[in-house]
Each structure stands twice: as structure tokens, then as C-alpha cells.
Length: 174
Image (tube, rainbow, N blue to C red; front, side, top):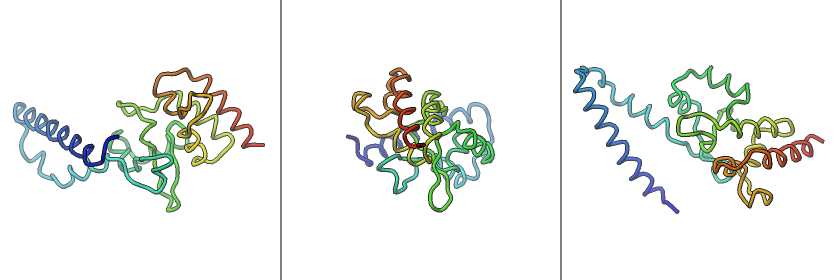
């Protein structure tokens, strides 16, 4: 198991390399230094893309918050809100009204795996977002003691997980 210290070190190494590459490319292209004047804002934006920590991390997290997701996706808050309303992103609301988005739903490209959305929409027919998110992260005996989210991420077929989701959503709605 990796520790936070190890993950931080790895992240800093990768960021350092990518920042150096970005500045080297900017120098080669003749980009003026003023483009990078607001380093505080740049650093804030980069940090906002990191998963945040909430009490639900043990069950469902870690999470992105709306600010982090808008920066990563390069879209407005309204675009994220539309995705939430369309159930095309897995989103849960905290007691303070803030939306959070579990990191495990996203591919490296920032998209949500379509099979996870199929499961999410099925589950949402019978329960609230937190119950559905916990279900997606809970080990299922029928899926080889994997969670449905891991099952999908590992490339297993949707149908067995979808059958379980349908059965539970129907039971919850009854």
C-alpha cells in the first residue's frame, strides 16, 4: 500500500518535470514571461485539481469538488451542474450544499466510464446519491468480491453488475 508521503513525492516529481517542460516549450516558442506573472493563481488552479478530503472518503472517496472539476474539465460551473442534472457524472451533495465527485469514476482523459453511468442511473431510480455511491464502492460477492466500480474499471462486462444494480434498486424502491 502506498503512503501519502510516497504519493506526494511522486506527484511533485511529475509536476516538476511537466512544469519544466511547459517553460522550456514556452521559451522555445518565444512566449513572454508575463504570461506566467500570476504564479499564485496558477498554483491555486493546480492545487484545486487535487482530490479533496471529506468524511465520506472512507466509504466513497476521495473526491473532486466543483472548483477542481471545472478546472480539470476546462468548463464552467453551469456545465458541471448540467452534467449532474443529467446524471452523466456521479455527484453527491454534502450537508453544506457543496457537490463532490468521486475520483474513481473518471478515466485519465476526464470522462466518466459509460458503464458506471449506466449503473448510476439504474441505482438512482431507487435511492439517493450517497446510497448509490456507497453501493458502487461496496464489495459484491457476485462480482468476485469486487466493487461494481472496480469490476467495470478492470474491464469486466456490465451485465452482471447491472443485474445486481437493478435488483437492489427495485428492492430499495419497494
